Amino acid sequence: MAREHRGALRHRALLVVLLLLAVQLVSLARPAYACGCGAMVVDPKTALSVGRETSAVRWDGHHEQIVMSLTVDGNARDAAWIMPVPHRATVELGDSRLFDELAALTAPAERTRRYFWPRSKDWPFRSGDVDGAAAPVPGAHGPGVGVVGRERLGPFDVARLTADDPAALRDWLASHGFRLPSTLATALRPYVAQRWEYVAVRLAPAERGGTLRGTLDPLRLSFASDRLIYPMRLSRLARTPQSLGLYVLAPHRMEPRGAIGGSTPKVFFAGRIKPSRTAVGRLAGTRGAFLTAVDQRFPHPERITGDHELRPTATDTSYQRIRYTDALWKVGGTPAWILTVGGATALLLTAAAVVAVLRQRARRRGAPAAPPA
Image (cartoon, rainbow, N blue to C red; front, side, top):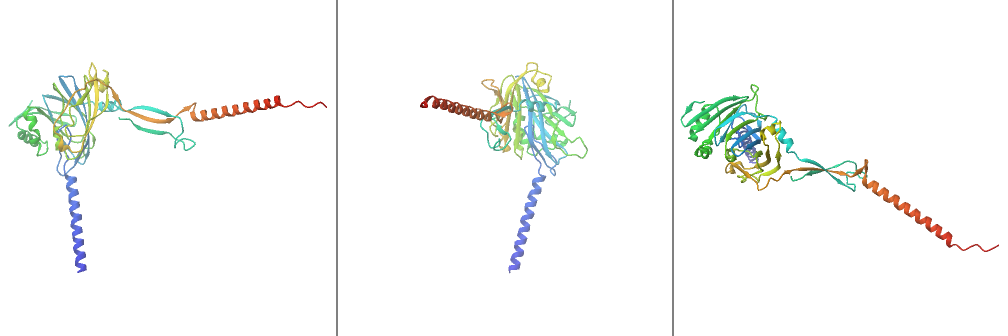
């Protein structure tokens, strides 16, 4: 009986291990959908995750430009996504230097805070500096679908589409190699009802047989818009937490009207940008622009309720994070406390010596005269 009982336990343990392994394999094979730039999907037997979506948006009150940059990881050999836009869009490759310049421009300012008395990492306790923390920081037509244009831009196959039927749009995409989630038709209904248009993008690695990894080349979309809108609704199809970095260039400082199901958007830079020959300066335009940099997390993408709409703030208040480094106050390379303590000690010794001399003189004056011999 004991042997049969142990055999049953081993059998159950083996079943549990096999079930856990199956769950892990399924999770690895599950495609990852992503990002405000639309639903991204790949071959069901591969995986792709978008850990970071960074976009720069330029709006002058009438026209909008969106430059998108995605950072992806996984073993997928191709991917596709779709971006809804309120009006007809033109699409071209973006400047790859743009986001490096924006990151440098919005980086925390470096400041040094001096302290007087030595701390645990200073002599005579231990040598070294103390680093502080950052401060707060033309086209063929299918049923219900119109093809406005189809072009090849570097590694991107781009289709610009119109549609009055979300199911027909989904079918057109599927028949032309854009593999997107089966739930896409439902997610697109609000855009179809508003008669928006769509930019569908398909991407494959430059090297044959390669996989999609790292930061993809940026794409720039331009379209007319009397409101500053950043489409996010399709991100609710994502199955992994999402992160959005949004650089907004507009006449004034801007703010999202709401969190749309994510964490509270946090501004990490705000300031006016002058025209220049840099990628940022060109995007800002001949009159310059006010740059607002916003960061937001979406731990539960399925809770996303709509698109980001941004509005001007009451005042154009500038803001920049500050990273402080604490350092011991020194004078000529010598810690100020040593000079102060040493000076005070010398002063005290001098004063003590003066007092001693004065006392000695006083004793001499007050000493009685010697009697005559």
